[in-house]
Image (cartoon, rainbow, N blue to C red; front, top):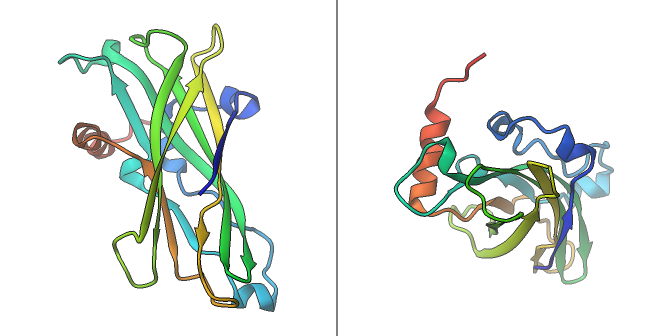
Length: 194
């Protein structure tokens, strides 16, 4: 898999809602909105999904404190878009993944680092056949509390020519510690205030 990170600070990041509001947006990306041709129906793209429990990460400063003043940063995988290309020896899935981060009061410096993963599962299997982790850094410009990246991913599924990859699945999420996962799950249990 290849990955390049691109700062994504323009309209997307400026127009972002608070990260808590972005959680519901994961997985709204598309692998193509136009009507497929008969050939494309025969050779469709794998399913891509951002894992709900692993869609956000909150980083706290070292120590026992876990209130808002202890937050270094928060980030969310908010959307994706892309396509796939069939070749003679497999399928390349081109995914643009959008990550938005918010600086917390405890962050020292102007950067936050995150690790996310891409996992691929074969048809009929629950466990990933391949899982790769990637590190990325978000730079917060002076005076800005939000910034983001567009991550370009190109996972490749090795398949014989003309074998359909439509039943493969690609899962994306943050690589979390057990404590971060527990924090996310507690946040998801909170009622939404309107």
